[in-house]
View 1 (tube, one colour):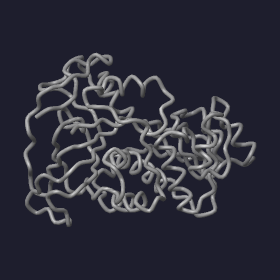
View 2: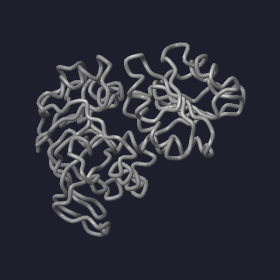
View 3: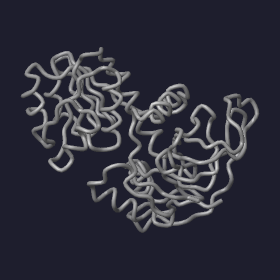
View 4: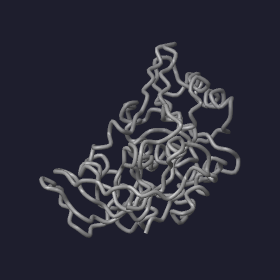
Length: 313
């Protein structure tokens, strides 16, 4: 079984084609022929070894990737979810060793898989699961009532875009950050007001809401730097484990997408919102799987808007 992964952690050169065993199809699971896999910052951390205590991966290697789009190849016993062989689907992958999205086939829990959004290409569909589930989880943890104000940093990115669009669907007022060249994009995604991104973004948000925003989703991962943007007793969603300072009664909610990786109903609702156009599926570019290193290079260079996607067909 072909995969793109690493045996020795490192830079871009570490990515190469490896042979991995087919995964066992158990009860309540589904085998998917992978057509497309989105590339995310988590993938670069897998490649570099930032998530490992060793400089070498265990055999047969580590395979990055958390999002797939493809076709149902086989369905395990006790898998009653209305799917059939041949259905186009999307799924979220919790990567572990060779179990990652950059491979020809993958076996996933049925509860991590739903039909692909109607009208979406494989590349577009692959941009949905991980980031949309992360955004939905963040907003659920913040639990802001309609009419409240949410600030979003990193708003031009894929996660930031989903945060804006889901927040607007929830009836929230959204203040988002953007570089000058991204301002129109962020407004198109639905932000009510846009402030310039940067180290002083909290001050810029406070200029619009002097008492502070009711909640903030920190997709730019600025951590303590953006806490002043939130009012006393407000709430913040963080995305790489930041726990907060415990000051001013601000509640900090670290968001882990693995906590909702088998919330099939949530993923299905997001699929429906994408099909309706409420969520915008943004593809920056599609590259052959053999060019995974180039995709990682472009992602790490910054400035990518939408997801880079690998074609595994």
